[in-house]
Amino acid sequence: YAAELHVQRHGSADLEGAKRALCRSDCAICGGVTGLHIDHNHKTNMTRDRLCGKCNRGIGLFQEDPELLRRAATYIEEWIQCHQNKN
Image (cartoon, rainbow, N blue to C red):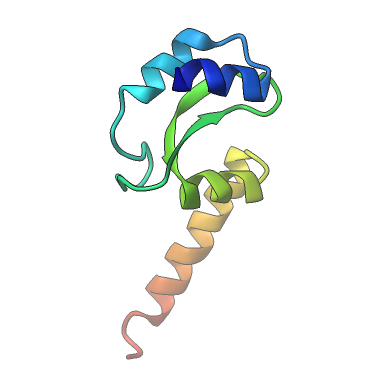
């Protein structure tokens, strides 16, 4: 039922993808187990996987843009590298 509800709510034709995502019991990014959502591509409405609320919102805030996400990761890694010996 949850897969059908997701498909209706988001206008997706990807019922099988939603069913596959529901088989997952943790977030595909951080491994968290609470507040899980079925993530989908907002341009195609195709289901991706299950994500926790924080990871799902994070991807949305970065406009689902892999390059922006990579640049954010590089920014954090460079900051850590620069400051790890200063504490």
